[in-house]
Length: 285
Image (tube, rainbow, N blue to C red; front, top):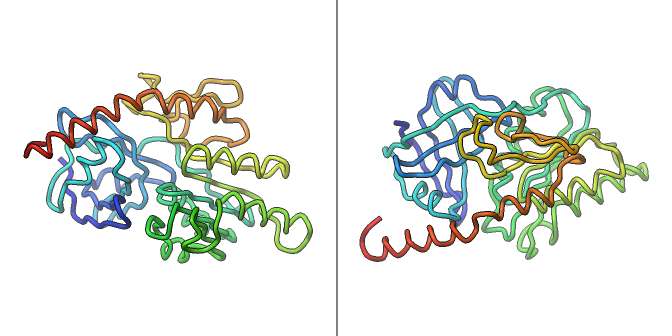
């Protein structure tokens, strides 16, 4: 059992937990994740390790309540325990000195790009961060991203904060300015967020030949590569995000297939959430 030692609401429906998991905290690296299970009848879900404190033995996770499992997880309080909390899983992010790097995060994907930005800054890169959300109320980790960035750009879909538009729009402008000699060249791009956003980032950087990696978020079950649920096509080859990723070359990922596979269980997820809300309305869980 893994105790929730601190709980915070970062935005409507977006929660941050610090979980006591000393063995995970001791070995965690940027880009890795955990798979957790709320209770014995719960499904397994993957969540990025946002931060790990080896001295305190805590691991930070951030998630948005969108379905039955994340709703149940979000209902837990400080002092409650999570049944399973397995990790660190996945291959650590590629962290080295590239020169100038752009870290692009959309929605809750900002939580996944933050540890990468922090690690890239720590090894001496000039870090440009671009983060976005649907509205200012849903924007997370702005202060934290400022702390690890040399430049920070904010976008919102509705224009309520920063630039109105998409994170990929800002990235495109920066690359065009660099190509025209008006600003420094970007040597590496890392992105995390909705699949459509990551696809857009890949298409923006492709003409410039800039190395671009994305943190993929396919459906996962066991986290060991045995079940095959998280398979993705990268460069025409089948990969398993849980053991080969979650980070992959953005220019080789079949994003259309990923979008299709992630939509496989939308109806089942809708029904599960409906049953949960109906039970809660009747006084049960």
